Amino acid sequence: MIGCGLIVFFYGYRYYSEAKQSRSLEETVALVRNREDYVEIDEISPYFLNAIMAIEDRRFMLHSGIDIIGIARALVSNLVAGEIVQGGSTISQQLAKNLFFSNQQTLIRKVAELLMTMDIERSFSKKEILELYSNIIYLGQGNYGVEAASREYFNKNAIDLNLEEAAFIAGVTQSPTAYTTNIELGKERQREVLDALSDFEVINFDTED
Image 1 (cartoon, rainbow, N blue to C red):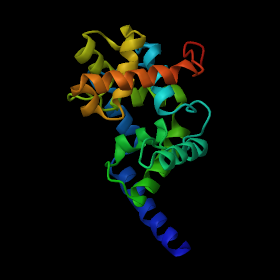
Image 2 (image 1 turned 90 degrees about the vertical axis):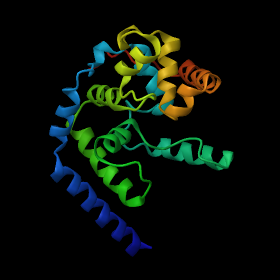
Image 3 (image 1 turned 135 degrees about the vertical axis):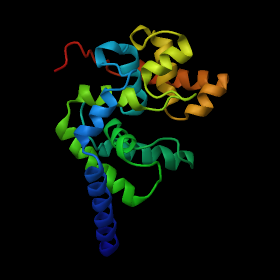
Image 4 (image 1 turned 45 degrees about the vertical axis):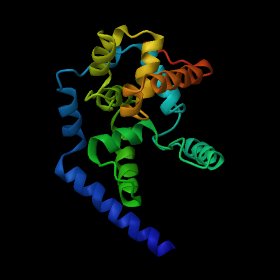
């Protein structure tokens, strides 16, 4: 068992190293920030920022990139449901995956993702990580990032999203195609986000460092 774990870590570390050698974290982030539809955090509705944390990573401001409590909670929920209903990945982990890795679910990729997550947490503030994540997530109908999605679904900029609109877009992240092509599913997911927000401690980013 230990031997298998060491082998997985070795190949995961190699995958991580190759990704960094191909293009550094700084270069990759610069490419994202140079996109035409990139928006800074103060150009994104606070409703969306809080909604995405409430539904994707409730402890985002507290953990250091890897949330053991969140992983345990997801495991229990999945065991009770008998299927995968929650993921354990943090926003930082999802950012690492989207910047560097494929969606292929393997232990080797997961190790590489965790190592890159630690780099991201060391290099950027929570506000920067949330800003980057909000700009690269796939939100259905060919739209990447909250600004593109806001224009597509509500014909407005990301800063102008109201609570219900923000909840809809934040909910799309789980299954972009399903929630943007099936109105009832989309509304059901929107309600889940609104419920998650009801007991979430809202963050005021205007006062955060």
